[in-house]
Length: 271
Figure 1 (cartoon, rainbow, N blue to C red):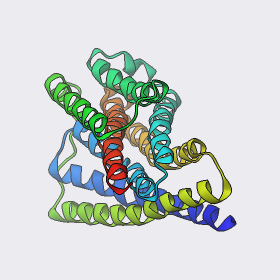
Figure 2 (tube, helix red, strand yellow):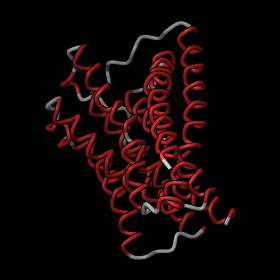
Figure 3 (cartoon, rainbow, N blue to C red):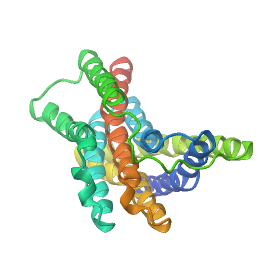
């Protein structure tokens, strides 16, 4: 029975390395080549670091252990907040969070944690109808975000454009990283199913374990964002917190409004 744990650990390591060494660097190169804003870069990083949750939830839904996938989403959103605040405190950027322009992002970040816990506490049955409701919530989030968050005045440090090689290498790194994450996530989900069924570990506990594992890419991205800004002596220009906060909210809202509904619909169709 030790084999599922070995597979789970190896796939987790593979997934994390793929995101850290391929996916994130690819996104950075792509954004630099296209001169995308700080906010856009943060959101792309957030969606990309949610790929492990996507693959794990889909695999769990197909394997018939949707509870583990649900708690992977719920726990990931909580853990992501803890990791984000840890990075903020580690680099002493807590004052940035009181910036008026960040109010709506912080609000949606809170919703991304409260909603899954509220649904569980209320005993709401996750059906296709509720899935479409979560998708509608995500659309509302994007509409409000687009309306309220124009390019901020502090976003003046756009990277210089790179040659075509930067764009192509970024795309290739993103494709390679995504492919590895998909393969690793597939076995993460199936290993979780074996552990639940054969060993009797509670689905919620497996979900929390997977939540810790799949949140490592977010942790890496938060600390890397601040580390890079510190190395450039630009920690207090708000670009860093804008990027890290958008990475957090995009990841969490993507988990809640895209990945969770997709898992619900797949589980409904398969089972």
